Structures are given as C-alpha cells and as structure tokens.
Length: 244
Image (cartoon, rainbow, N blue to C red):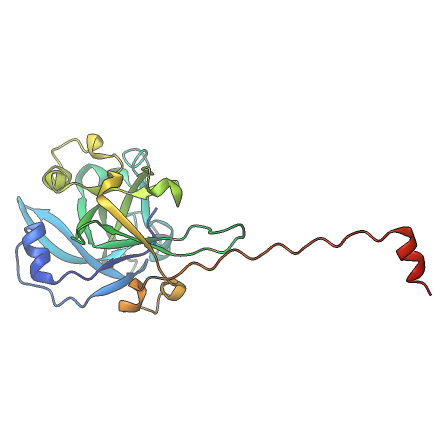
C-alpha cells in the first residue's frame, strides 16, 4: 500500500540515477505527494527514458470521469495483469514512479491511534516504485495522463506496519520494467527489508496541505494510556455504613 510519498532529490541527481533524457523540469521538493496530484514519472519512448508529470490515480480509458482515479492509486501486483482497469497498462504502459520516501499509518499502542511512519532507503538514495500509466479523454476531449503504484505482499519490515508494500524495483530491473516486450511477472516481488530504514514522524504529514521539511521530522511516540484502576467492591459493612 502507498498513499503518500516524497520526492526531494534534486533534478540533476535524479537524472544521473534514472538516466532519463530531455530538458530538465523545474521541480520543487515534495515531502507529501498525495493522490490526484501531479508528480514525476519516467516513461520510455523509442528506447529512451523521459521524465514527465502525470496525475496520481489511474483513470482507465473507459471511465466516465476523473473521480475514479482517487480510488485507483495502487494496483495489486498479483492481479494487475488480469483486472480490466490495469491489464492494458500492465502489458504496454509501465513506468518508474520516482520517490525517496513513503509513509504508512500503523496503529500504535493498545488503542486505535495511528502514527505515521516514514520509510527511506538506508543510504537516503532515491528509488522507483513500479508504476502503470494510462491515457484518458474527457467527454469534452481533454487529454489526461494518470498513473498508479503497484503493490505486493509485505516483506518482513513492512509486515509490522501493513500487510501490503509498494513494489520498489531494483535499479537493475528498471530496463525490464519499462520494456513492454519483457514479461514483468518475475519482477512482482517485495523489495528486501535490508534496503529500508523507518522513522516515526509527527501527524503533521496527515494534512495534505502540509508539504515541507517538517513532514520528515522524527516524533517521539507517546506512551500508551494507563488503564484505569478497578475500584474495589464495597463490603456489606462498608455499604451499610455509607447509608448513615
């Protein structure tokens, strides 16, 4: 599962890491990318990689409006090749979704409160989610390009926080994922736990309007509330004396 992520890496560092071509985009750092917003992805055309801005939340060509995209921010890797909404994109429209962190909201303590957790690579390097993209045309003829992030069953580190994990690709697999002639099924596996480190951060990141470095600030977990002590049942003598 992936519902928010970050991309704060400078554009020239991204270019060297992902080897895309074309003029540089003027990208501001993003600490809190949210569904329905636009974000950079790498797509391949005629064997060359290009960095482009797409809308997060895949909208299939047959959709009546854009609203379906808010419910299709992730595609399950186990079924993406079969589901009508994703299968065409899985076959021929795969992309790299650039990131350098992502968030989860596990329940902490004995209550129901959720605390955001930030996951990053051990060395802080950027990485790529496996992504799918689509074309969509509105009834008025407006063209919109959208994407989603592929997820899979959680690895050991993520299983502590959520049963799903975004599919982070190994750099050696980028070319295969982008090439529609390559069978992508062998790439649908959870990333190794050893790649990641995690940090509890404050609930500041919960608000999609908050998109600055404070989203990364570590937070101390509050201790779970103490259970109220049970009152001792009054004895009959005590109950009688309380009446007078």
